[in-house]
Length: 277
Image (cartoon, rainbow, N blue to C red; front, top):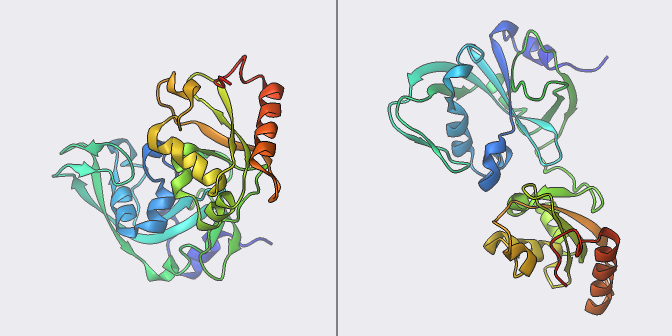
């Protein structure tokens, strides 16, 4: 029989009806860090982020304990911490979001006091659960949702690189990728695809420089177009990036350019996209 998260709560002597499960995957963070990146890189900023909550969540968050989870780049639901929770009232000062652009003006959100609870907090960064259906329902009651435990790791580790064929990410997230992913992308060259979520146009590009895919993509994050004429003709956008083909380690620049030309022909990205040459 698979291990259940509620069994761990009961073994620790925690009353299930008083536990709320929170799954943080904030899509507003397109121009900043995701909750996972906040938790990984800056725990105080993560605590500040989750202590401020919208008024509309007040009833759903009413409980003595919060089990907080973050969604990793690989889509895992990872325990970020287990907290004793108390409601402190409405914010009396402006709260500047640490992960994205914006702020909560005075009197516009609820503030909670969170204290790490050692009974389960040692599992933070190690326990992965199956959240199941209803990902939009990011606040749930533990007594109504007995989650399956998928894995308890020896120690926190970044999710494994999914492989070049499966890699997909917004350009805004490239700088915050796990260390192992960054190393793989920096060490590899080849052909990639940018797609614009606004105009639904595509652009085929090549990465032939010393820093591979990573170095080429970071040039887009710096100025929004990487020097490309077609991209300059559009308003800035958070392009989705994926890899079409990886070049061999001995491939010359000329060979990579020939690969790029073939992909432009296959996808007709000159006729129906943003390529101009």
